[in-house]
Length: 338
Image (cartoon, rainbow, N blue to C red; front, side, top):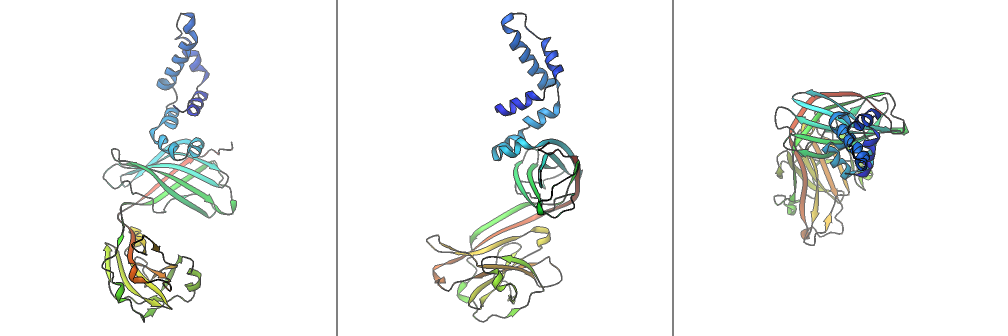
């Protein structure tokens, strides 16, 4: 047993348990002290404070301690839950420190098999504070026997605003499961047929993008006109156009039903020496009023590259299980500074 955990557990023991333990003393002088201690421990673990055993010695904490002992030591037990759509959501523990909150939660499917090791909360979680914030969600593990996944949620308020209040409400609306990952060559994408004068159009809406050259093309970006499906490496992902625009190679990918599946990924090139060429920019956009179908265009600078020595690869993540509900837990929150 971790010495620090043992010490913390003993500090939680009420004096009355020591008094009761004294009644279990052995009559032999040499065993009085140890008999009292042993009896006390027996009372602690069999008669007292169930929340202590759950909070300190719950198996889920073992996993968290392996990942981040610092976070695990700060968390305060909550053990409050709610259920909707046959799925139980439990806040195991949490803490607030300044403008940052850490929340340890579990999700269990009570009726089916909609939760697995790939489950995430689809960025649909939030806390009830009046300030803008940034957040992240880490899947800590999955227990197939109980159909339970555990997550560590980190939420930070912008502008260094403290997360205040004696109680906090944590809310989740959606979950994604049964994700599949594809990371392999794209043999059906014929790079010998890249158009040198492709038609371009102005996208209806640009979601954003990234890469070292994104800012250079953002304002005047013109997307390739879709020419049909060049290849479909996985369900829900189609490569729909390819061509040179302003001497840079553009490859267009359509991700189906992204508001439900969160399908996403990227394209890259690799040669026999395992040398990779990543895109210098990627731009996400839509072609119509509905944003269910999202297009992503990957831009490559191949000015000093012999493309015949490289093969196109795709890295894609798809999902076919989308669960919605209204999971909300309001619980008291103790600051670690208190």
